Image (cartoon, rainbow, N blue to C red; front, side):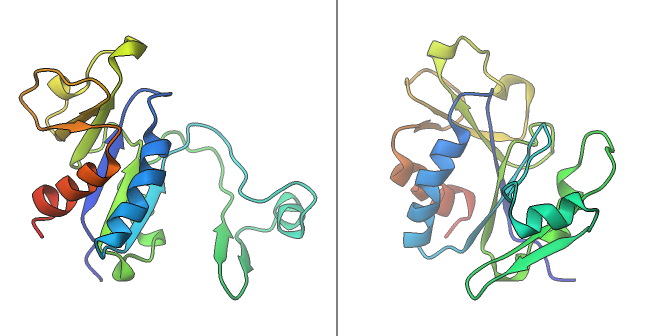
Length: 170
């Protein structure tokens, strides 16, 4: 079995900007030579294909999995009965890990993996790091005293450097 590349989680309360940061961070990591995959946790049912499209109609008809392939992209949608909360580690085999240098994880707050917490004091939510020993840094839009490394949430280039140098040790 191919070893899994390092996992790095991004955790925060809803509305803090996890996806926004990852969209800015991924190109920065790519510029630094990393091949990055992402696993995003969703708390609800979701569709990646659009109603009316063939893949959607095939899935609605009961096909599972449905694979859509083009010269540039592959997507596989599996349907399964509601099974309660899903675990991160059960999902890793479905990611083509052998080609990746790093897997960023959005959500999966309770999983025991290294994480960067995103925090916006203006939202009035408590910090997660005091109760989660797996949080290795806090990224915020306001600097504050913290025993962990503080990262500027508005500087994705600096966060990418932290990931490469401090987390990956490259």
